[in-house]
Amino acid sequence: MASVASYTVRRTTRPLGRVYRAVCTTHALTALRPPALASLRFASTASTIKRVKEDRLMSELHHTCQWGPGQRWGDHDTDTGMSRLSLSDTDKQVRDWFASTTEALGCTLTTDEMGNQFAVRAGKKSGAPTYVGSHLDTQPTGGRYDGILGVHAGIEMLQTLRENNIETNYPVGVVNWTNEEGARFPISMVASGVWAGEIPLDTAHSLKSVIPRSDSATMKTDLERIGYLGSVPCSHKETPMAAHFELHIEQGPILEKEERKVGIVTGVQAYRWFTITITGHDCHTGSTDLGSRADALLAASKMIVASREAAYEEGGLASTGIIEARPGSTNTVPGLVTFSLDIRGKDDAIVEKLESRLREEFAYIASGKDASVGYKTQKSPRDKVAVKWRKDSDSPAVLFSDECITCVTEACEELFGNDVDKQTRQMVSGAGHDSVYTSKRVPTSMVFVPSKDGISHNPVEYTKPEDCTIGAQVLMGAVLKFDGKRTE
Ligand SMILES: [Zn+2]
Image 1: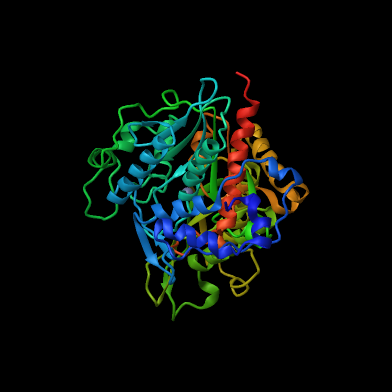
Image 2: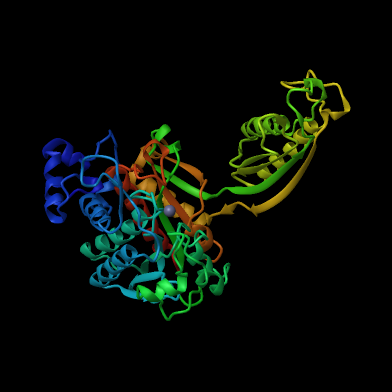
């Protein structure tokens, strides 16, 4: 009824509110808003595409947000964030819903020993399923779309396949990954990490809950407590996939800023984390003239500014989130400063170049030769500070599969026709996702849809129903393209 294809029809012949009121009756949601129907034009072939349904997708999504609603930010029933911590009672409730819904849609359900839920719909032939996956857990002050949209889009795909009697060549499935957020059990994407063989099961099972602080639960004890400690080993060998596609909100501002509908995600950016230590001299702020100081905090400040400028010029990112100055006294010039440095880039070469450039620039600033703010008064040997780098993390760029990126691109072409270049763009994910781990074992790619004001991990996180639907349509299209190309 409220499929993507029906936008034009509804715009001209049907009051938009009616569809939504019908939805509201079903799930006692009075606040679903009609989508802002932009001047989207779809390909002339669009009528031949099987359509996901916006009303069903959105009403089901908001229906499951009754389990773990978070902070309220508006007057409508659905104007709340989410606080559904992994393996909590509300996570159990939404898992029960996932199980009963997918079983009612004819799927076979497997739960592994990390609590990952795999729902599989049979195809004409047997073989590893093509999966859609994301997560139903949230941050403590999260929103209704991060992860949740991806799982719901998978279920909407199952609904659409069933109502159109579409039999895929091979099985297709939906996976709900456990504890993607790493909020309650502090390793992000831990369950897909175990599945990929990158994180040991024992490490994951013995992770202690950090919310609330007094909690004594581990992942294993709470998997048992809520009845989701499955017997199937958590491994890509036990629950194999032909491919993994994930729809996710962008969690950044680019699509919205460029007024595009879909991000075709080609990978996840590289990052390196460092702790930088600057050593100068403590001295009295009153009795030490400006020319006789070795001010570690002044040097650190200049380095932080330099890192931002270098990142801009190299097309990467540089950020400092932690800074500590010692001894921490108003009337002592700090002689010891440490600060964090997080540098990122869409590929490893950018990060490498940014790091080597910053090593040079920091050394130059530390040498006291820099003539910009703060050093022109310095002439003494004490001008110099020492700088030390410690590397804390190194995460190379992830490149998604060309094959899967092509499937997403073709699904976009089918949906947008000649408008595809205007409505979509390739992009690299700035955040980690379960797809990072699946990509280590099977062909993987992702689809992004716009986030209002680029905001995520926040109760006001919002993606328009229209955009959620477009994302779900592209996701299903990509799965069907992949299925159609399989020849094994
Ligand atoms: Zn997420």
